[in-house]
Length: 220
Image (cartoon, rainbow, N blue to C red; front, side):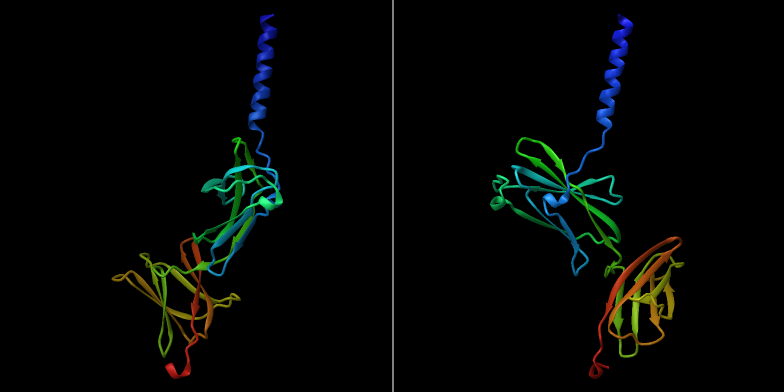
């Protein structure tokens, strides 16, 4: 009898562990009209609606790099009453102003007034390139040339300049240990438009977009 009881207890433990290990099932994000788009400033704009049939207490915006492990990013309290009817659905918007290159996932977690939690399938965005931070890269335009200054404390930094289509632009590059700054000078004057700067240190590479203004003839 004791042996049978232990066997039953072990079975219960196995079942409970299996249930606990079951992954969280996500609801389709069309239920909340989830959208994640990149604006002109390379920020990610997230928008969604309160779901039908739910009385929502708050939302949590989560982010992930791999689409599997998510981290809480922002909590959004719902101050207006939602009964879940179409007429009562509320629209929410949030902008992620953190500049980072690569794939990002955004997921909405809903917690209703009865403290039930609902997970919605994530939205995926890909940011190919981000604007160059002014403290890292700056562009000085003169009547003779365009000069790019790159702040780096590594004298072995490799800096490459390309067009938006990826065509390399020949440049001269000099580094100063005193100012810890590299100076990149294209061999010819650049037309106005966007260009890519790649900063490579060893195996690590960062790619930025930097605008060059069109210089009027009377300003030369």
